[in-house]
Length: 444
Image 1 (tube, rainbow, N blue to C red):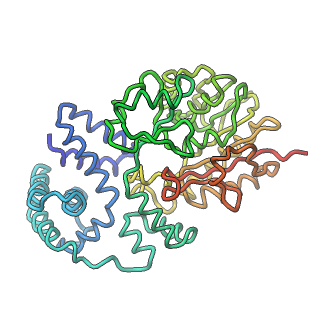
Image 2: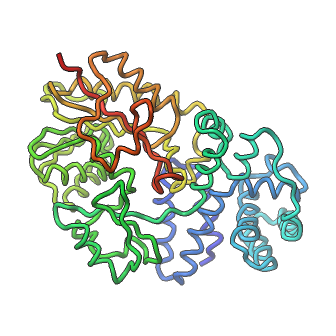
Image 3: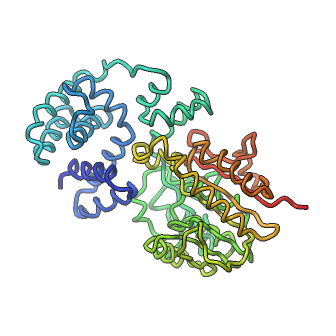
């Protein structure tokens, strides 16, 4: 097994398919079950390093590669990035990193480029600390130094200013420890802590997730931890766990999860309802709908039904709901620390492209609210187009709605901003970046 060739495959697939990076990496690693665990860990580390540092690596490479990087064939550029990541970030010995990159180029049939790879990486190994810093305006400098799209950095600077923006970018460069949510239908957080203690000696609580545990210290692969098959826990970022609490469900309610996806939040809503009431989870994809059903079964949920349908065109005759969650499809720019591949998959026009779907889902949710009911519009992104502007558009389209938080848990109130919107930020909250607005019909 050649770990660098495995990393090369994953990086290529991440640019060629819409599949999640975690799925691509898991699929690649499953091909090497018998490999040394250190090689398997190296594959993942190499992939994430290249994606997290791509713009910075390109800046350094441009100083030593004889041709403009944009003129290189993508496979050649990928080989150079892998080699640069080893030299600059992973501190593989120079001779070993260069030799491995040349061998990778040769193994991929890129024989005509081995000289370029060898010469470029040897020069990089000698001279990268002396490369001048990136030039340009502040947005361009930060975008290169911290490897984020420049158009996103511009928006962050307009909103948060230089210091907070750089802190946000830096927070995305550090691997974030995984977090689990105890499934309170079957266990408690303390019982789960006892179960995992021998595997994960450093388990920490998070203020946004009363059922959650953060795997802060060394731990085995999450998939190898006990209790998953029995439904005792679900992987869930603390910010995502907070979303369920913001909706404000209770046992006996009729609840709709309009964009259920894999069902992480659906399972949490069922637990908050104590599996009492009616929970409808909508998912248009047949494959994901089946996976959602399987996940709810694993979690011991009996109050939920999965409705395979388009959330903007639901079947006629549905009864009204006390609560509706719209966990809207979005650009996902709040999860760039955990999913660095999204930095290079998103384009400046994507927020506006998604806005029509988001508004349609929000209007569908509002039209299904029972008197006295409430809905939560939530995203895991940071653009104004998908967040504040979308809520304004929804309020204009459904003027009977108002921004209203009800009995928000005290532990979540710090996330409210001056406009009455709720959000998390990775550099402040040590979790993914979420946005939420809770809307209800005005009374009287």
